[in-house]
Length: 75
Image (cartoon, rainbow, N blue to C red; front, side, top):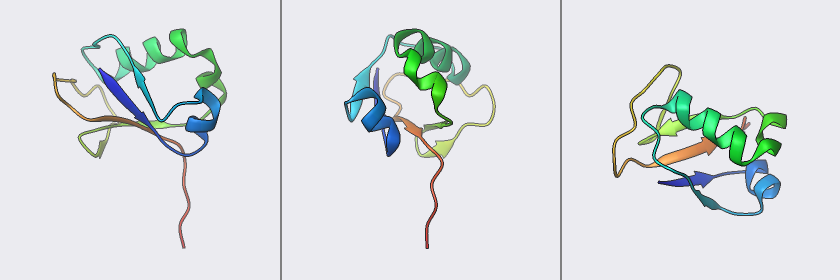
């Protein structure tokens, strides 16, 4: 599955997108991300699935858009 990165996470990983093995849910994905890219442990971020921020154990389906969003501020 393709995972989109934003903000400081692009700088941390050095890529705008990363490929990950399929995960059944957001919690599993986060665990797999931390194993593959341990530097992510140093950052706060949320997982968005189809442009909806995941605060629970959302299921990930084939073809879903997955993004890692660091904290942001606007004005």
